[in-house]
Amino acid sequence: MSVTELFQEAYTGLKSLVIGLGVTGKALTQPGITVLYPMQEVEPENMGSFRGHVELIGKDEDPAVPKCVACGACVKACPSNCLTILCPVAAKEGEAAGEVKMGPAPQKGSKTPGVFIVDFSLCSLCGQCAKTCPVDSLQFSDNPYMVRFDRQEFKIDLLARLQRLAAEE
Ligand code: SF4
Ligand code: SF4
Image (tube, rainbow, N blue to C red; front, side, top):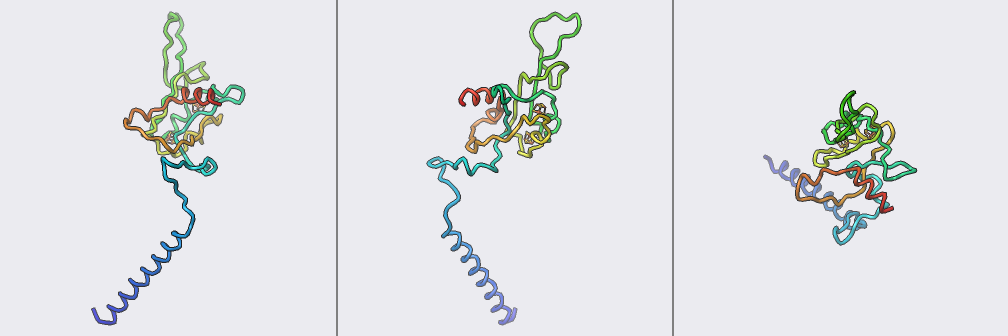
């Protein structure tokens, strides 16, 4: 490498260093956009675009009951197999009415889910489930502070969650 080429390389390196320091210096003078969790939490008005795990939306007239009609479309649409929805299975003719059997949604004659679980450890937050739902019964929750030690704890009972949130309102 000639002396001229060495100087050119040094100049290019120095120039990019100065540009980089300029960007860093500019960012240093801007107000902070992160928070020091757990001492601080993000303001609710800044959570508009946040996607937490999916959750059920309750009926306007009864917020503890989901709008969901147990059609099973979201289960089919989910590419990660996160959702489990079970409904009561209709008793067959001549079958004794005893313990209610549950089966995967949809089930004939059942318009309400009996079990609705999301496994958040598998979810990619793609939104296909919410997009597919014909009655707008799914949305993203807004809890960014979800930390667990056990993978099983990411299986969330969405019916229980809906009832708990409705009771808190
Ligand atoms: S957001 Fe995507 S990955 Fe998560 S439950 Fe819905 S469809 Fe499945
Ligand atoms: S697509 Fe909507 S209505 Fe159908 S099972 Fe899923 S949440 Fe319920």
